[in-house]
Image 1 (tube, rainbow, N blue to C red):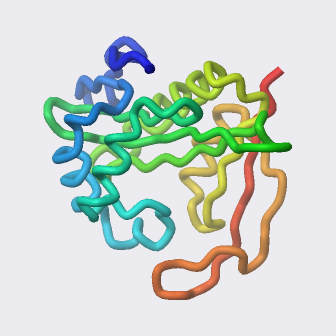
Image 2 (tube, helix red, strand yellow):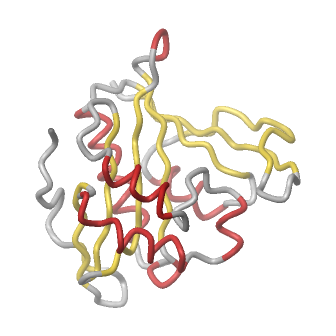
Image 3 (cartoon, rainbow, N blue to C red):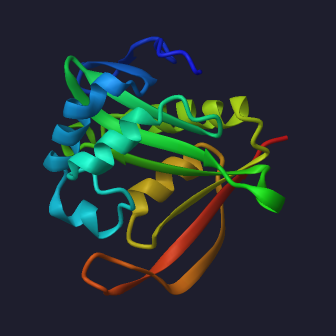
Length: 180
């Protein structure tokens, strides 16, 4: 089972807040539910896991020991500021990991996305991934910038590939990082 210790030294955000980045723990359920519930409505257009649901949050928090999946949280005191996960694919894609990340509204544009991205890439390497895929809606320019800064390259745009929670179709940008 992965350690629950801090994955980096504390991160100081641009506005001076001290953030701890660590693996998720089962005790994070309430804080993760509060985090999900506080996300802006427009974030729910693209998120795959509904962190406003107690059942979903329980499933996420209880999966902290999963062999091919790592979940990371950034914590500001007792509050979760960001969540990221990396999950290995199976079969002929078993060398590929998929990343998801969301930063809480109060912590955006503070450097936390880059810090979380760097940690989740390191976790992918610990899982022996040789390629990491990040998929996001074309409109998510800030997310694309974070991953580009980490060395990800756009592999393609899938036209009308994703649907939001209202059924509207969006283009999906696929970015990848090949780890040598």
